[in-house]
Structures are given as structure tokens and as C-alpha cells.
Length: 287
Image (tube, rainbow, N blue to C red):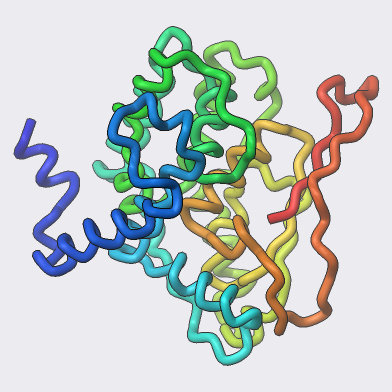
């Protein structure tokens, strides 16, 4: 077991100084929520408890959150460096499959479902004001199984797979969801934008009228710093927001930033009245 974990996490990539700095940065960032949870029960009291880990792990791996936070502090993309690139993982690779298995295990508990799991992650990422309405037992299960480092270290469109898997197991709200495979969306983005001047693209805006869980806009985050999307599925919108927090902070937390071409006003999430075509309502989303 220990050998398999060492191969999976490949800690030999990091120097002792990086490990020490990670611990220090996570502890420092956690001061904003009164320190890290010392017990799984404290998760309910600490909105945003995953963020210190997210910031720390991302700094070791991709450097995207610090890049974006510096732009937010400045209030403009003018003069910013090139967008830190994410190298997307092959979903069939051993590390990505192990991460997919981790997500499956999170939802293996008899009380678990995709909606409560999404709410739990949203709370941990401070992406919602509402504490998840789950039992202490289920919270402990999520807390012990979910591994944010694996998610960041092996980036791909995990939550599209999770939603499809849960739909196949009886989650009716996901019926009709057929995401474009992530390797195809990567290819489409590369074909459309791979040869364009990066400085030009960074000031432009990318749109996705059927965002799903973000399969198209995740690879687009290597080129664009502003994006808009919408979807009829409320759970897909939540999962897209979660994945943008994982991999594309400028889509997850856009802020008041200047320097973009043709500035548009952000479109808020809009829940329309239920209709005959969509009993659950029509959702629109911007990130």
C-alpha cells in the first residue's frame, strides 16, 4: 500500500524546501477561517476550508491561483505575464484512473449522492453561503475519501464522468447529459486557438452556450482569462463551478478586472419559472 501511494503521489518531484513551504502557506492561509479543521466535524463551521489546500497545492503544481490573485489585486490584466499552462492528463492514465476511482468512492456511501457531494465541495471552496445539509456520518466519509491533491495533480474533466456515472445509477436529474469527451474538446480548442497570438486571446472572451461540467472551457483556460457559459442543468452548473475552482480561477472568481476587449457586464445565475419543457427551471451561469 505504501509503495503504491508513493508512486501515485510522486513526492520525489518536490524538494524538502517546497514541502516545508507548502505546510507554512496552508497554515497561513487557514488563519482566515480560524485555522484548519482539526476534526471532520469542524467542516460545518469553516466555510472555505478547502481553499488553503487549493492555494498551496496549485502553487506547487500550476501557479494559477497566485497568478490570478495578483491580477485581482491590481485590477487589470494589462502588463500581466503569460497564462500559466495546465498540461491536461490522459483520462486513461493510471494516476487519472486512480483519481476517478477516488471520486467514485466518495459517492459509494449509502447516504451519498451527486447533489450533496457538490454542495459539500462548494462549501469547502467558499462557492456558496449555504452549509451542506448532510449527516455527520456522510460528512466524515467525504472528508476522509476526497483527495484534492490528486485532482490538481492529474487535471481532467472528472465531474463530467461522475455525473454520467451517477445518472447511469439512477440519478434522474442527469438524464440526457452526454458530454463531449475531454480529449475532443482539447483538440477543438487547439484547432481554433492554438495558432493565435496569446496576448490577443488573453483579452478576449470565450462563450459556451451549453457548458455542462466545463469540458470545453477547461482547455480554453489556457488561452482566455474571461468566460461565460450557461446550461439547463442546475447540477451541471454546480459541477462546472467546482471544476473552475480546481483549474481555472479566473473563471471561478472573475472579480472587477479591466483590460479586456469589448467589456460586457457579467450575467448572473438566473432561475426561470418552471415550464412544461423544464420542470426544474432554466439555469444561466457566468463564471
